[in-house]
Image (cartoon, one colour):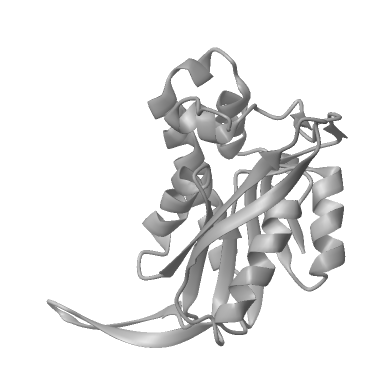
Length: 216
């Protein structure tokens, strides 16, 4: 299943537009908050796909019957850019387990790059709903490598990928690797540059959230 928020009119499209806007991007706090709000919206949409159980809640005047999620959710994030989007989802899935993966592009002098994965922290994933979060799904290499690494911690019963902006190339790559997975995005862009950056995209989500880094 593919869910593209931009295909329907909602306030979420305003948040995506502000994430892209070079003038709004000057305010790092607003950029992070917009990623967080987008995470909240996508968490709500994902919640509709979970398994539910009936529960009873005691009120001051009686017993209320309702339904609550029965699934154990694990939110996994690729550092550092994924943190604001992760926090938005954690605002809704507040009892979720949490996993963190350090994966980044290691650039070479010829302009090529490889994905370097250096750190993983994760609870057991057996029979869990795993939600892997990264704001930019460009080539899909980081997402794919992170997911395969996380599978060392157990077998989730469902896999979801969450991103703010995806490229068509990255989306197809992830669907080839994980045909049963669900992909949730704020918007889908067609083009990748020669250096594998999404166009029009929004730039470097990590730098826009936390400041420029020194490239080693």
